[in-house]
Length: 232
Image (cartoon, rainbow, N blue to C red):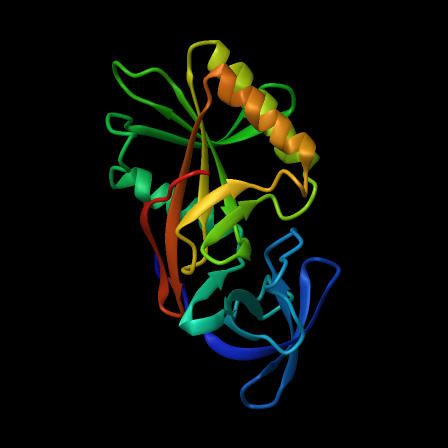
């Protein structure tokens, strides 16, 4: 998946109000960028960090830059745009993502459960419906290990309860993590950050929910999915 417009390198001054960031472009201009990430962004939003932003000339948008990447050590990158995970998965499903062969209907943002929406409902002849929830993963506190969540998430726990119910009905319930940083080789649940989420995860697994973690390789040119990562 390529970015719509070429990214520009910048320096982060500060992130605030969750969705806003003051940045300095390489030409010295200080501007406000949109931060498409409601999470804690632990380790990715330190003042002075080297980041990459996407400019736009859309008159409907108040902010003309969107924060997309943060540079990591040893040339690695992390994509901080949580929406990119869904776009990556959508493209992969359209091109035949392993494990989802035979589904020819990809229905995004479908209502299900109690006041919830599933990221993708998949349907296909001779296939049970597949409910796919996508989560963007950017936290890493140990070398090579990606973790989710990066903060307490009642919404995430609710999704797990809904997916557990789906699995009990006989449909496929799939939680698909997209690890949007190039320096991780495996993944686990951060139960110390959110014990309730970890407990809901255990219950959903018992109910029959499937869990997958896909690696991703972000660069200033775009993001590609790599391979399935082991879950610890």
